[in-house]
Length: 108
Image (tube, rainbow, N blue to C red; front, side, top):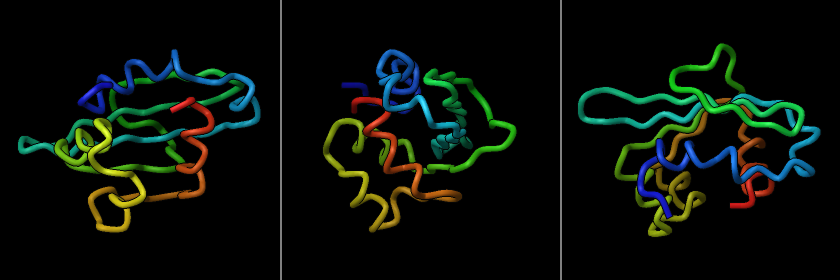
């Protein structure tokens, strides 16, 4: 299991389920808040494929924002993403219904 959102996103293209993502077209923006600013990644899903790029996507459909510590806790299983949303540690902006598709699309 990875401990940083960057490591997680680097592995994401190998985790995609092409059959489950065939009809999905979306751009996810992952934002990691750090003491020295923010790190941003853009994840584009189209035609059963995924592309991960450093930086903001042109037109993201949803942004997921959390601190480095919160991302680490979610990725290690210490913090459930739904709980993180409820307690304000994971902020969502945009089409929140897309978040529910992540687990299905990426076999997480």
